Image (cartoon, rainbow, N blue to C red; front, side, top):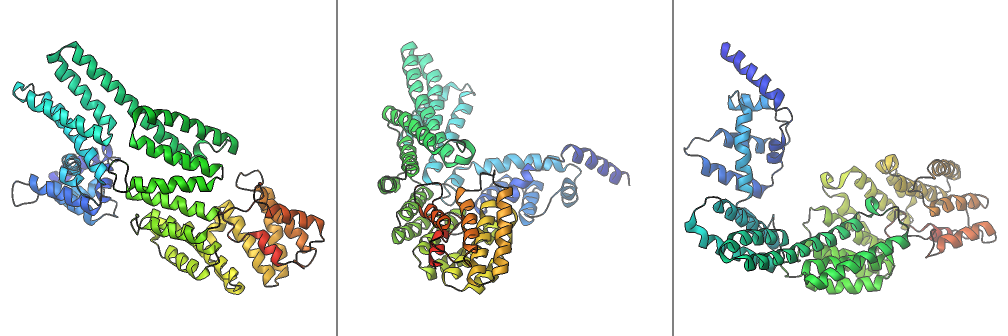
Length: 511
């Protein structure tokens, strides 16, 4: 009885202090298969007898119960211990050591060649530092040779952070034996590669700030965005000239692609993409499968903007060769192929794409994305003039209508178009009025476009002529002309939520 009370007191004490200490549990429960193998390999090596250690038992339990909420109380009962925190503390460094094994770094499913080399060299620097602290004079020659090898490899692969760290070790290890001249020589070399490292960070930051435009430069006008990108390009070109870094050059080319896209110079962007692909293939320093896929996805977009949809679809198909089939990138690339087929009126191919997208793992794609793909299928049915089925299917896109302003508006407009095609005039009138009030309420929202507002105005004008388009109605004609423009704020956009260009549909309703 006393033992039970004592154990309970221990648990209450340690569970209260360790309540938030669930990081190691969460980490283990989310390890992939190769990472699990690495940890299990090290746990078995640490076991001195045939009996499993408590750390191994806990690890295997967590792997078998990946989706469960494992508390310290559960661990204590499972291991029959009143110190579950100590078992976790012993297990944590074993997990980290396993993830730093050389053989784990060589796993191609987790790491590309560059990552593998980079991680191994970082580990070698750590080993040299540890050996250096031992003050064993007999290993100085070995340490110097190891540092020279690390420096040679990090220069070759442009691993600048590790390179400057290794050069700093060399400076203090060698210069004390060779004098101030060698010290200054190495110090100058460190400055050069610190510059390269900072230049690489600058180029990388510029690219990611452009990639996450909404968070960094959303408030800028298009003209100011272009000026900002140009400023980045000028600096990165200078840095590339000074460093001759392949990685800096890679980011320079990516930013130039974005620059030409912003200026709508799609042919120039395509030229850079086509030159960049062979540079990425079989290049250890900058070559990554997903990077090649990204460039092909760029090509898909730019060919679409130029209305060259066959080439766009082919580019998206090429992109997927470089993605894992169940990955998010694969799904996005499939979506881009869908757009290309839809714009080209290849509706059977578009349907196949939308089916693949709908069948994608929802843990990756999410409920909103599923609703969006249902909307895509409704648009296909609309283009096939299967209006009743399109209307029935559209009712399943509930997630879009709940919380996504732009998608909400697009779904509402398609509903109105379907009501008109099915001669459901009362429903069309109610839907138009509801959309008008919704846009009026949200008009200050940046998601509401000038085009959306003009579409509502045009629908109200069409209402006067029984939902036909009367070119003699000067106001209606003026709005159609606005919506048909290609270089104004009213222009229709590729890859937008408005799959069916509203102005084209209106012209088909001409009296």
